[in-house]
Image (tube, rainbow, N blue to C red; front, side, top):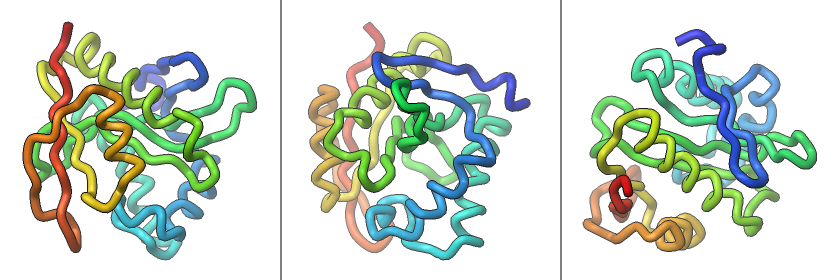
Length: 170
């Protein structure tokens, strides 16, 4: 999917857009930080590059994927959120992750809500889950703020994850 074919969306405080090369440095820092454990980190720059390149690749192969999150007020890259369904995944997911220093501002909830709306209105999804490590209290709280219901617990990376089911399209 060409970069220009990835839709740009907006929420109250965020722009959800295609990833750009300039997003790599903050993502490399994210993947070097222990906060990235739920996303397969921490890891070195070379592995961070491969993880980063998956996002536009997901769009190219699936026709949907995660967006880069840009704060409207400052233009700062603050994280990612969007639609996620790599090979072997449990089912189509709404995912989110914020850079260190961006937590506690409501960005994850805002971006995930906008992503869920897009999944239903623009991509034809009829259901979605979020797979969240059982020790990721912040993301578990986001899922609950979104109204998702815990459905099951599954093996995940080196531990367990809860599968939260989002309400279907209205």
